[in-house]
Amino acid sequence: MSFGDSLARETAAARRWLSIVGIGEDGVEGLTPTARSLVQAAELVFGGPRHLVLAAPLIRGAARPWRSPFERAVEEVLAQRGRQVCVLASGDPFVYGVGSVLLRHVDPRETVTVPALSTFSLAAARLGWALPETPQLSLHGRALDLVRPHLQPGARVLALTSDGEGPAALARLLADTGFGASRMTVLEALGGPRERARATTAAGFDLGDVGPLNIVAIEVEALPDARVLTSPFEPTPVGIPGLLNTLNASMLSRTRTTSPIRTSLNSDAS
Image (cartoon, rainbow, N blue to C red; front, side, top):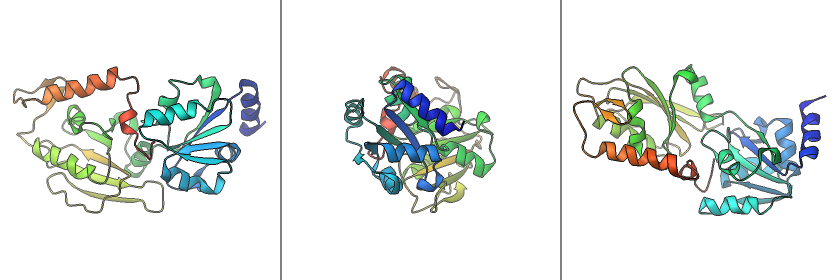
């Protein structure tokens, strides 16, 4: 029995009404047959404007762009319980994506998820980096200082940014804190026809026209005066006024909020 047949039986038995489908920059061409059928069968398809355009050839029901603020969009999805609903997400919906937000409110037995490759996986594949050995951060809508504890000499870091200005802002932070020699590779629109990768150093960052969908790969190189944190809360003897308060506030906010990744989701929610 094929996976599709098995899924159909499980879906009928469990009354699954919500499907969460990851879609990449390659659009419908990169979707599995199961993912395609879920999009086609949905009465309502939610997603960011970019996702809805990518999946447009398959959408038979009503396309619903995410509402703002995103909390209202989640409420709108939940209000459709009992109908066949599909939510489109970028790559893997459970890697800094909408999947974990929705499943705070929906029993997993009511859902089926078909992920695509995450941006982190695509970046690691392009660079030949081992993901288990690489910190993976989202700085989308978050303080850039959250990268600081991971700036250890010789380390490699993957960081999603908020927009086309994000890599330059990250480069400035690195240069200002003694990591200007670090190599930065900016990878844009991974997996699609507009994919591009460019490398520079933090101190020499001069990349223009960076696309809004990007991830930065950092190969950390610390200068002698680098301000290295020995832990997220303990600086080296050369302290930085206000930095620990910023880090503490950011991390506590991520721990206490009911939807820790909510700030990483904009109108084109992941």
